[in-house]
Length: 297
Image (cartoon, rainbow, N blue to C red; front, top):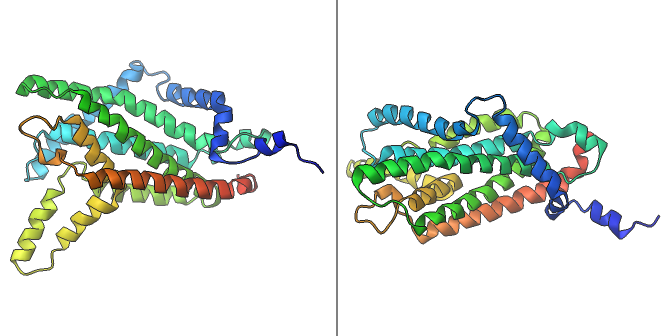
């Protein structure tokens, strides 16, 4: 039986195949965004209001819980939480992207990569909308402290968003294919997210661990706090992206740069490396197992 080149291309199964269905991908992304705010009076405005309201509440609560003061804490908190929520929402929705589209997958052939990718892309668009809240807080501090917080340097934010997007896509592909064969992965991932949020320094400064380590060393004890700080700083990709994100929302040329707004070249090297590695791993396992999806959905 002779297989035509068109048939081979049609069932290539690679990630690049998704671009043959770019119109459908666009429709899926638009549908997800519209469904989120359907029948909502304020609609897309909630993308800005929601993070602002949560920031206000959490700023009040955590400013009393942590004695180690964090300069410009609301800005620190909003930046960290916004990026974390993007990755969390993107990967959480991508997890069920294949099992939620069983009917379509059984009726016709389309690139299976498209379904988790549409969820992650829709989450990124929603995240871009929510950055309006970040701009409002930056304007507030500009007026309050008389400082210029806006410059071309802030454009580096989009570099971080791309890093996080690629990382989330790789993790989303991996979770989506695992969920097809092992439905309990949803509950395991939810538990992991709880741990992940506490290990990403969203509402505290990693510097508190260094302060603790100094006391442990002075007391002749093993500096476990120092080891924990190093694990968070170098082994948690999301913390690296959050740190970069905070760096670019603050202009490094001003005189008083908060300690949390400082990064080094290794933060960018590790950030790019984690994004590429996760994308490669997720794509590899998704492509390898996608032909078996139909047997389990």
